[in-house]
Image (tube, rainbow, N blue to C red; front, side):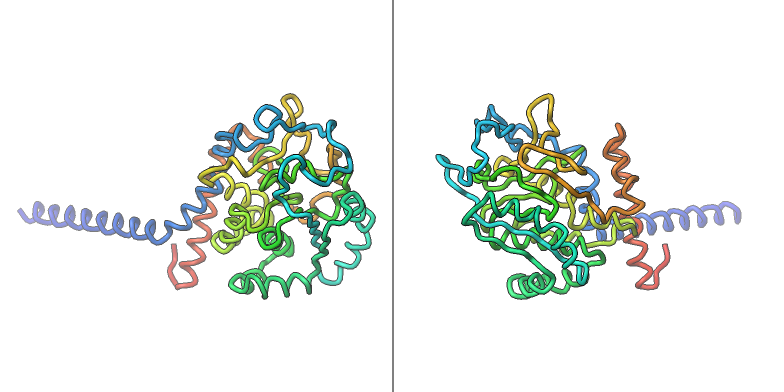
Length: 334
């Protein structure tokens, strides 16, 4: 009889323990729900990016647009006879402390090529001092986060979105040499070139002033500001870079006006700016110098046929790392 009673007590204890663990797990999930959602949005990008792509990819069929630019004059600075939705403003960002002056001098001729094919356009060169003043004046709620970014490229990326939202216009990497004017693209409220294998590049973007989508990229900067996987490349890509921007794009309710510039069938990568390359509108003369040893790992995920599951694993790992660090700061071990 005593053994039976003892066994019953053990079973009740086990049930109570399992119930407690289950409740604790639910509580942890509830507390981390925002983080888990963010991880899922980033991890799911390769799976959902191409959904309804016919709506946002610029095409000759849907938009009557010549993707080769052969039918447009090289000096066409306006979208006429269409409305110019993008204001005539060129933005270049040259930040990096003492090294910025060398960067400006190195790419001065390249930058000048874009200025020359857009005569009469307003021109801005965003240096560290000018950028800091701009953020403090127009986005004071983001100032501390912006100044506290771990990597300089994060500050540059975030600044791109803030500049583009506040002014509108065209933002270009310093190493993009213009082969022609960008007027034909001004008919669209937002344009960016397709990236490989997924999403779009942020080294060249055009947008109308106070564009709703660009505003969404600005508003979500704080939400995704995490040290992802503890590595430079995913931290940049998932907090401010192309993967971040493309994720915000993918989760917009209506992506029809958020145009992505790719090539025609058979030459889809015609306008891709991955690495040194020539496109119908640019010569991309540089390459991303901030890529670290971990870049190959992340890029390989996008090329793999298992990219969906692999990104989910990476996202789950990111969630675990962030939760563990947060608990350690509170003195709790997991």
